[in-house]
Image (cartoon, rainbow, N blue to C red):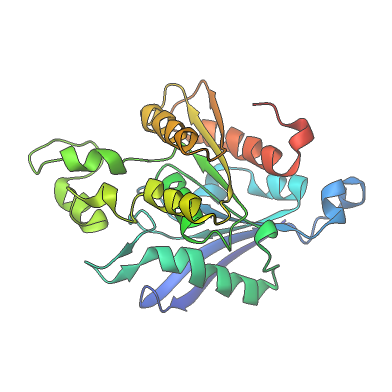
Length: 269
């Protein structure tokens, strides 16, 4: 396992940005007996959650072991607390940064495959939302999406008022990120809007894996999103298991998602 911390200048965010990478290209032992090393490495763009940063996954999950098991490279951008959305109201283009600029930069810098089949995106909580949204915004780039405990809060924003208490953030924050909260769910900020457009146009839709703990406070919006996908005949694998909103669940189900993606013969829903 090779571990990198990097910084480069992002035109989409108009400032230097930091990222973390874990690569499987220097495995010392075992590659000769691992069928995953008989193909090129897959590249997984892994997104953090609200109040996190690009090092969260590396700090809290054994990414080196996982990279060496599946022959995958992990690339983790810093998305701040912006739900990985382009924001006309702020000028920050987090969707364009993660879905286009960061992918282009890492492909060029690390000599990665530019094939959709070799490029996945995943994330937890806010990053699960971001993974789904980014995959649907760039279906020509990402072949699969692994969304864990996704913060699919967009449909409840219209009911939020300035005096309403919220354990995560206030009304002004959500308006700053999503724009007009009364209409946000009808815009491209909503993953449902994006995937419906793909479905109606006949475009390719990335393969979707979702997982959420049954005791997670986000279980209901995840169930509702899966029901929405079912209603428009978009296939998705949805795994539920005992668990709350923490890395105990996410560590386990990152592996579950990669097994779904790369070892379907071993995957059990």
